Length: 192
Image (cartoon, rainbow, N blue to C red; front, side, top):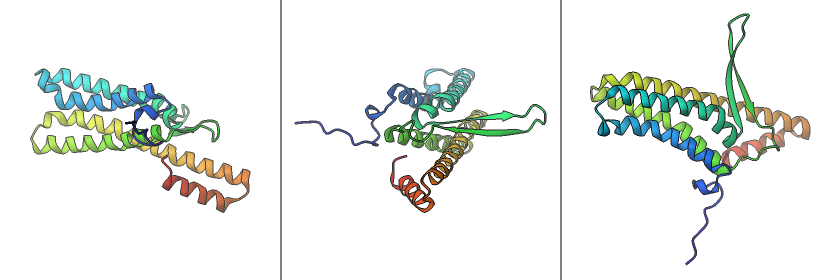
């Protein structure tokens, strides 16, 4: 009996173009939640659980922003501050179309993980409130700030990338309507 191969774009890490990056990304995403949820089973030290969870959240934030986003979906963002005025602005970067092919499996894992984690932390905030465990709310608030910041930034970066690709293909191809239709259909029915 032969084993059926997963289809491209399915949620199987074996189909990833960057399996180590993907597994490290998912490991950071899951580990902070697991330490928060199950830390009290192994120790009664709330401070240690708090510190380990914060360190894992910070590592997840950094890894996702600077490594996983660039390797898995070809996106990167950062914030720059103008030294003369003090104004800050977001900078979005995406890989050039045609230079990097985004693996559908990597893309699906990335976008599911980026949107799911803030939802888990919101649920944990609600649980902390209704179970009167207010001591955990600062940790959940920090987790929400970090995960929502990355989620919003990568969402904006993706929209910026799509707009840039659309404008570039319209200029190069000369067929604006065809470019819009192709990008919309590709976005809705594609896996990216």
